[in-house]
Image (cartoon, rainbow, N blue to C red; front, side):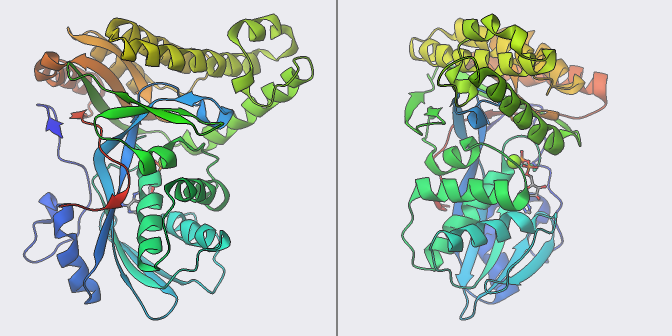
Length: 407
Ligand code: ADP
Ligand code: MG
């Protein structure tokens, strides 16, 4: 990770350990912490977070997305047990829980849900898991829209399958983790986060068709950088509004499918087609649909722009995506708008937009490589002055998907 000037150390709450400086804890320290807690030698697996370059709120509409896996990741250290107990410790939260794979669990409304959900879905899908002691540690800030949740699910799912001697099919794992988040955690997310956490490619973004799950790598040209600016806010609305948007999209599909043949999802509707049927939709539902339909078109156009090195056009599409998310989909907030605006004002920035579900979290910008040197100093102090919040700004280099951790 190329850390620019305004970078603040990854914000995590650590508990104390004698000879490890918990403030500078690195994933490499995980085996030592694990041995101390559980008295066994662990295997360590890693699953990355992601940044979505364009195609926001399109995945659950069977549409197109362009995410890249991050080097920021969640690590799961694991050792099998002889029984069917799962014990988990989160280093970030300094919190523990345990459950028996043979006793049905119900949702607790806590971080443990992500792990119970994955274990439950794996077993439902026919995998037979062994009990295990697990320690998780993430270098991602949670709830910042970089998908710490999917990284946790995939890292733990990968780890559980590995120690259980089960073969790992990454596509199956991604689908199982999505089901865990949908059905157990209760967040009706699409497949994007889990898919990219499993299938990330170093130095590239992935164009993913969320209906067919066909995908192709789109290399990031070395002359540009992806810069992520964490606003450091997370508005409570995020979870409930997400499910509400999903319901609104379903309403749009129900109304449109009665007059346009073959509409199964908003993916099947074109921009002009939607305009022509505007009268059939309540004003709010029309706006939500207009975002999704136009965003699908922008995602495809953005891939073409990236592949022809037309970064100006890519940046224009990023800016348009942000406006659409703000005005039509209404998932932005004052801090995201400000951060995007400040980023766009920096020389060498092609475009900037909110990324992730919204209501806080991060802005992503496409920046000329040489311009990253002054980017953080231009954006950071101005953002802090206006909001009293110290943002975290960093350049990301797309990394590989889930697998054994390599230190
Ligand atoms: P995002 O996926 O954008 O980071 P979410 O709200 O979907 O935001 O997921 C964040 C949640 O995932 C946290 O509140 C926590 O419950 C869980 N989580 C993620 N990483 C960890 C971790 N390392 N330890 C414990 N819980 C985690
Ligand atoms: Mg999430």
